[in-house]
Structures are given as C-alpha cells and as structure tokens.
Length: 250
Length: 73
Image 1 (cartoon, each protein chain N blue to C red):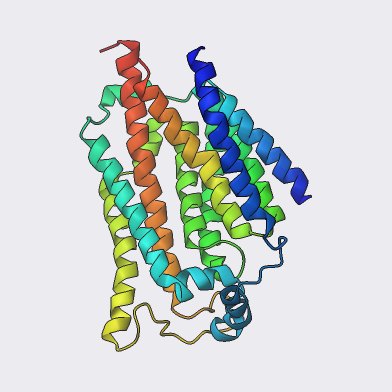
Image 2: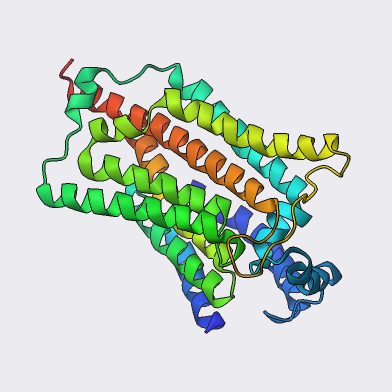
C-alpha cells in the first residue's frame, strides 16, 4: 500500500467520528436568529437604555466585557512583539534593497493615492461610528492599516517606508495598549470597578453616546492600527531584503 | 439563502484544502474568505464581516506571500 493510501485509511475513521460528533452537536441547535441564551437576551434588552449605544456589539466589547477585550488586545500586542523579536534580528533593507522595489505604472500610482486615502478615511469612520453603526476600534484599526499598505502595493517600498516608520509605530502601539490599561486603573483609583463607565451615556444614535467606552474604542483603534502596521512592516522588510538576494545582484 | 452560502463556503473550503501550490492556495483562500464575509452578512453579523473582510483580503495574503517569497530558494 502506498503512503498516500495508508494515510487515507488512517484518516477516514477519525474523520468519520469527527463528522458524527459535529453533526450530533449541531443537530440540537436553535435555528439562526432564535438565540435563547439568557445573557444575550439580557444585554439585548438593557444595552440601549443603559449605555445609549445603538451598536450593542460595541457596548459588549468595550463595556460589559471590557476585561475580555483587554486580554485580546494584550494577545495582539504580545504576538506583534514576538514577530518583531524574530524578524528584526535578520537584518533590515539597505538602500539597494529599497531601490529594487519600484512601481512604474502611473495608473497604479493614481489608484494608490486615491485608494489609500479612501481606505484610511473609511477606517477612521468605522472606528468613530462604532458606537452607532457596525464597526468599532478593531475594524477601524485594521482598515486604516490596510489603507496604508496600499501605498506599498501601488507606489513601492520607498513611499511606504515614509509612512511606516518603526520609531513612530512602536511607541504608538504601546500607547494604544497602555491607554486601555490606564483607563481601567484610573477608574480603580477613582473608587469604581476596573474599566467602570464613568461618563454619562449621552444621546442614543450620536457620536456622544456610550460614555467613557468611546475612549476604550479609540485606544483599541490606535493599538490595532499600529500593531498591524508594525506586522506588515516586518514582513514587507523580509520581502524587500529577499529581492536583491534572490536576483544575485549583490 | 443561508443554505446556499453555507454550501458555497464548504465547496471553497474543500478547494483550499485540495490546492497544492501555495500561491494558488492563497488566491482560492481569498475567495473562501469572501464567501465567509457574505455568510456573516447573511447571518446579520456585520461587525464580524467587517473584520473578516480586511483580514482575509489584505492582512493574511500579504503576510503569507511575503513569507513564501522569503523562504523560497
């Protein structure tokens, strides 16, 4: 029996058991849109009266479950620190490397300027209106970062590097993560629970709703945008370094 | 509608797994990701759909492509 055949024979019983367990687990679920969890129904009923945020998801993420989001934010922070520790040691692109990556198409340049600006704007809008419409700090942050990356794709490494400086991005990432923790500690010192919402909820459906959870929203937007840009910068550096090395021009 | 998108996503996921060339796999994975985005919208989870949209079309392909380029001899 070939290796491939042997693997299939070994995998099939395991896959059959896995499939049966999944089918068994899914068979008892309520249909989509008919969730019966008590916690979910409770939050659905109290979020708008209590916090005046039209987007319940944002109120859960940054207020009712704010401490979970702190954990997630620190996971992202630690992951990016790990990537930086591994990749920065392997050398940075020289001027020769940077010159090897150019984009000559004028059409792409125009598209890049418009596209990058538009994506960054959409990202900021998503973060700002996260309390009212779908979106929020995380979605806005990744959109801003991907908008800046459009510069690398359409205008080349040199244009990208002017906006993605590590000496700017590294402190911004730390500031975003630190601001979240600091807001939590500040409410502790003021005598309330950790990450307590200390402002009045404002008017429903406006940017002035949700109270202090919008500060946490912006802290996450900053952290996520900077973390993603640091991540992209490290991988793009690796790509650009390999350009000259592979073509053997050194 | 939900059933149609679920079946399409299952087909695309199988296609990703059956793709042997990593470069083609990333493109197919992008299509699979977009189907998941549509699924999230159909299931009325726009917040998840927005995150997934950016991660699956920009962040993930960019990082994987750079890694493939760097590690290929």
